[in-house]
Length: 197
Image (cartoon, rainbow, N blue to C red; front, side, top):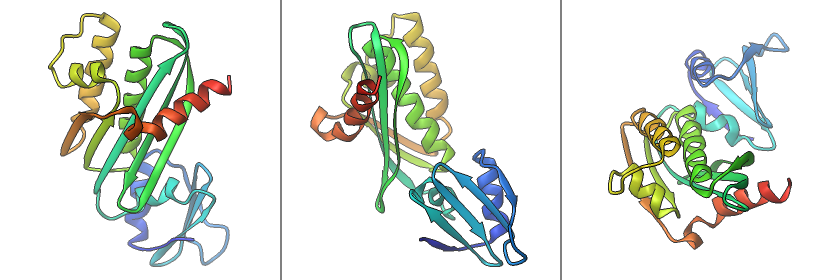
């Protein structure tokens, strides 16, 4: 159960800025409490105690510094187009901060890859990171975003613009193509999401 020594008013502001609802405390000693995912943060005079199954759901937002994260993304479809799923993982020196996998309906492989990248960047932004090093196993998407390949498909062009807007919210970023085995956690989350369909 992490205990974060901090200015609890500033911590509250960070949570609200990340879209987390903050409510009054349940006792005279609690200043406020907030929940996100399966984590609940309870603020006292000079510290916040994070409880629940995944404390990282809130803990990353409460850090004083934005910090640096490694972000992995993957998307895929069964059939092209077909039922599609995405997966992403955010990792810091402390381990996995957040991860998710979900079905996104019907899409092509490339559309799913872009949706995974967008979801991962939105999560990293919401967690307040100021530097991201993004990795994916889709050479096409990586090279399109970096401007090394043209993006002829209008839908993919639109998603590429969204990715650039999100990348612009970080002070520093890199995007690199990695082999699938380096991206196995994000790949696994995308496939698990598809298997649950």
